[in-house]
Amino acid sequence: AYALGLRNVLLITGDPPILGDYPHATAVFDVDSIGLTNMVSRLNQGIDLGGRSIGKPTGFLVSVGLNPTALNPDKELGRFHWKVEAGAHVAITQPVFDADQLLRFLDSVEAAGLDIPIIAGLWPLQSLRNAEFLANEVPGVSVPTQVLARMEQARNANNEVEEGERIALEIFSRIRHRVRGLQVSAPFGKIASAVRVLEGARANLGS
Image (cartoon, rainbow, N blue to C red):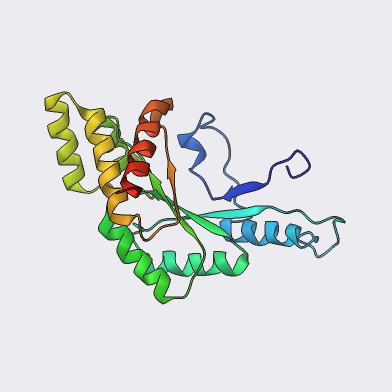
């Protein structure tokens, strides 16, 4: 990957194969995301996992995932600590739909002295069905009941996309001073929706 020009990597466990395009594929867990972070960090030092030289070292920017809405926040904080120790340079959160939950988790991160840049994930909801799917079917994503209620009202008013983008920008306005950047998803390839959120965030920064 490095020889082909790839420089930035996001190292995550990923979703179970059953959720992807090849549901009958066998899941293999020889190494977890912490172990993979350690492996790539060693490549950056010019050695492989077995301690042998690889010649010229790689120069990957190592990003890792972070779930501020984990059911066990202490465990998530502990795993984040191990990822930082393993050599992570930056963390990217799961899509954030609850600003208060993220802010509380960031307080814990700061108290633990885990000082690497954190980028917040934003997902402009496209519909109530989209919100319900994320809430009920996607591991690691938490959608508060008040967000679901707003999307239900928006469906009745026939403005679900606008409301989803509004929610994303409201969350950004709450967290903007605590994160180092944004990762805005384009749900279902709706790039225009992501662009509108980014433009709104940029306008927010100027206010």
